Image (cartoon, rainbow, N blue to C red; front, side):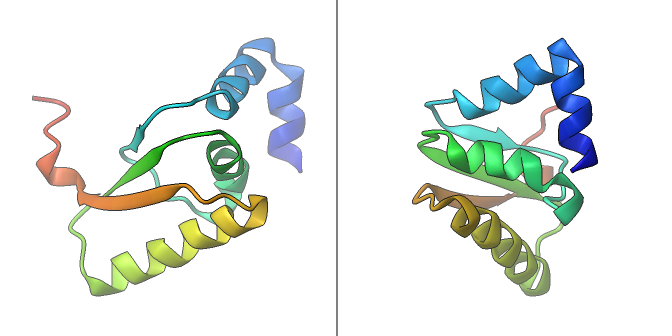
Length: 97
């Protein structure tokens, strides 16, 4: 995987990746798609002992929720994680206010 080679070749990126794996708390994801090209990120998150993942979805509807549930469940199964995740409307977070 090319992204992991890059992460492993840059000490700062490796440190950030390791922090995802070492995370023992609740995590919020805002402004990310969980696409297959970022599977390494979700493997790291679900490999950690994260208590709960809250995932923001812009203008969620049934189709988006179903698609994202499928993606996260796939990443979760890949590493055998039992971590819970919940979706929230990213517009409600007001992170830039």
